[in-house]
Amino acid sequence: MNEAQYLANYDRSRYDSPLITVDAALFTFHEGQLKVLMVERSNFPEKGKWALPGGFIDMQQDQCLEDTVIRKLKEKTGVSPPYLEALNTFGNAQRDKRGWSVTVCYSALIAHQNCESHINTVADAQWVGFDQLTRMDLAFDHLDIIHCARERLKQKALYSIVPAYALPEKFTLPELQRLHEVLIGKAIQKKSFRRRIDQAGLVEDTGEKQVDAGRPAALYRMKENSGEYTFIRNLES
Amino acid sequence: MNEAQYLANYDRSRYDSPLITVDAALFTFHEGQLKVLMVERSNFPEKGKWALPGGFIDMQQDQCLEDTVIRKLKEKTGVSPPYLEALNTFGNAQRDKRGWSVTVCYSALIAHQNCESHINTVADAQWVGFDQLTRMDLAFDHLDIIHCARERLKQKALYSIVPAYALPEKFTLPELQRLHEVLIGKAIQKKSFRRRIDQAGLVEDTGEKQVDAGRPAALYRMKENSGEYTFIRNLES
DNA sequence: AAAATAGTGTCTTTTAGACACTATACG
DNA sequence: CGTATAGTGTCTAAAAGACACTATTTT
Image (cartoon, rainbow over all chains, first blue to last red):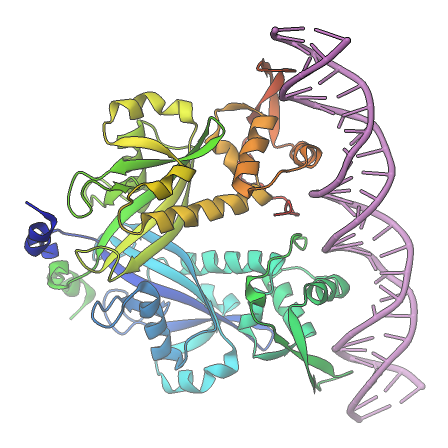
């Protein structure tokens, strides 16, 4: 038998295999809080519980795993997130009552304002403050997954400015610092925080100011590829 | 319908889903070279090409994804590796000629001596020097996966001593430094390398010496949990 | 003794922490 | 003016880079 004959005879339905889904932990920073997008399940299993946005791969529509996540996130938020990365894949015989299942998980960030209006039109989706999560009834192992994503984001806050993708395109440095402080769970020296961002040239001044209480803060925009930059030295954690 | 009824009626074979496999990039350091364990494929597709050790999840035998990798690695090496971590999951419609497929990939490290004898009894498995890989005909996207694993290992060499798991239980610091230098692709200051390991207390002196040419080197052993330690500052890359 | 490799002393450089200072807004 | 918040100056502390030095082995 040659490969062509093998492929012609190959029938995947002959083999039993685990369920496979793709999920995303989408974070944003709003009103001083880190929030995660959650979706209420309308079907069994775990009906009525809150879950991460996600679902099955559509082998016709999706060319790759990222296509699946982006499709699922667009359904809920109306847009595709500016930051998306593979988180981890969780699979075992117990996590889903239907049997052996695998979920390929992504972590994503978006500005609250960029999707708030669309989310309000989607009845089953809402932002949940990170601290409110434990009071909700979450489906599957999604709470573990969110903690895993949150831990990774904390690490990123120590050595990069990736968290900035959870803010609007134009943001102030004090705003970004507060986000990093929430992620790290500790105050950061203002001077240290600004100095490293300045020296690495990661942001550009838009010239605009944001007025609140006190002195107006300069609005910055991330420079191209600033998300890839990693500092050689971490902030203390 | 309630959940019990839903589950009783649930039949996963009704839904077509991607192929799912689990693969591992197992590295070792031997004779001054970084090597990867490769397996020659005995079946279609990609028959005769070299691939990462891996395969399908056995839903009876394996309780979780790690069980699958460890089972597959044990088949080839006779032992389970002292270091194993999730790498990434690769999935798309093109990577396997049988159609939409997903591979959950792990990265692992082991001492060459701990599995050499068993590998020699397995006809289709062998260590391949990293630099020889491009001259081989590799199956699927496994070369990309290896490069991804190698890049992650390089990063770890900059901020941890995780690569030490690719050495025997007892190793010398010059040996570990050479491994890190291969991974980083650049010479490291001997003093810097030793100082940070000393200060963090990551290794303990076994009292034994390894004689080669020149002054004998002290043999060290990693302390418990030294693999989890991350330096606050990276080596320069 | 010479060669080879292991291991140390110590000065410089880089970068974060600490914290007091100045700047610019509002009422 | 006082209060609030943004942003800077500057000293200290920690840890890596550079590199010359000493130590211990074999031949």
